[in-house]
Length: 204
Length: 300
Length: 128
Image 1 (tube, chains in turn red, brown, yellow):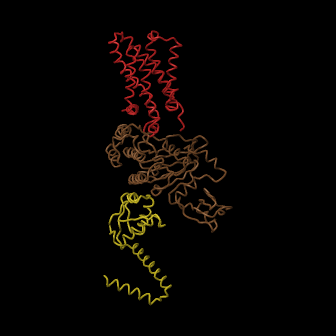
Image 2 (cartoon, chains in turn cyan, blue, red):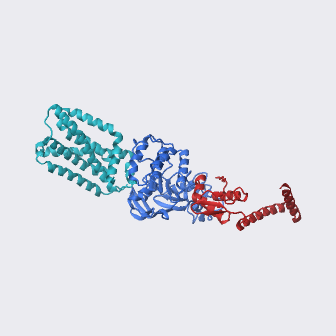
Image 3 (spheres, chains in turn yellow, green, blue):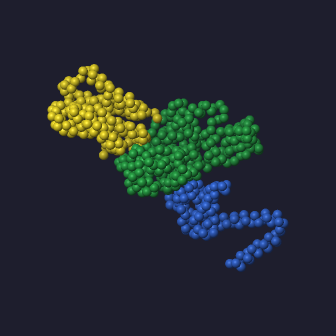
């Protein structure tokens, strides 16, 4: 198992004790969105996936895991990549967990879903998540959750909303650029990781 | 594999902030022995340990750790166990989960030893980290360190918040660990009882500087504690009165042994205990510099 | 082996260990070739530093009481070695010096001292 994979498993174990809360949020969102099942996937990507992706930082602050990362035989770069790997895993897991009920619910409600619509929703989910994480993670890695908490976690979302509003983006307009939007999301994440890796090391 | 020194710091300086810094910190521990790093809160103990372990950078000087120049290869951390006065594990992990989580990172992890140590320490595999008492939490961290076969154990303030029974157990655990000649221990403390008996070497640190380092007996021999009446211990030439304390009833200070002969006959000159040395070295000079030292409080 | 350390006797810990092990060897309680615990094991059991324990062993070895095996432990040497004899002679001298000091204060002369010594030896002989 590679070092980054081991780090991802460490994050999984870090958040594992709090899985019930995660499932509760998932259930609640599905309940609320039962009437608009085609929006389930992006909604989860905006609300649930970042929550899971950020959770190791929340626990780390409380439990002093920064010390653990410094004591374990792991280079700092691996710890950093491990955070991003965990974020990607959170996204994949959340979207997978959302796509299945979305398909079932749209079937039951008779809403047309699948193919092009599904691809659009997944793309939308990806870019919303990617931008959010790309902004949050370097801050979280540099300052820790406690110091950026509310501002840091809501600001990216507000920025994304503002961009959508100002650019008059609609689902239809995105549809024409699906591959490009995927690449843009990926580029945002990669840039973020590079930034985080080169940020000056905290003194303390 | 086995180097002569477990670690050696030479001229280490590190800017911490708030006007506090480590300055020219040098000391070393031969492999196979215990060193106590003694100083008041804010003296620089934790910063020194963090520099030693490569957990923070330093500006000047060099550090050798288990035969490697810090920061050495990352595998060096396989050989080091770090025990702080608190755990750095998720509170909701059970002790069995602690093992499952940490094991993949260590090449020499020994699960049988982990279970055997927990049983020996009276820790339940099903207990949660957050439910452990301070003493139990420390024993858990020791069990982790011994299970990945660390050769150097570093304790930061292990005895703070421990009851005497747990402190005594710690002394026994360290004794067992040191049966292997390749094993070494560094502990920092502001409590000088219990552990001073087992300490082979001492380093006294104050205000970010090493005041004295060496074998314990040499350090004890290097100082004398002097006591006199309220009017004594004044106007002395060639004698530095360390941590002078003057009250209406008398005056007390620490002096270097070679200077003790310069004192008059009316004062009582005695061999100090380690605690007396620590108290006098750690207490701020009586008038002038009190505020200056106050600033460096709690910044370690 | 039995070592009981006092924290308040004023005698350094290494000295206490040395004297007690030395006495046990001289009295025959620790027989020739019997194994002593390793420095590290003894340090652990007495909860004292390794350097202190090592000093006691080093001095016992220098005085010919024990031989240390690096990395293992130590064992008791035969009592008739020259160094031990010297040690015993020194003890005899010390004891006699004490007797002489007391005799001077009591005003005893050489004849009377020798009579006392003869008496003690005779009594010991009869007991044996």
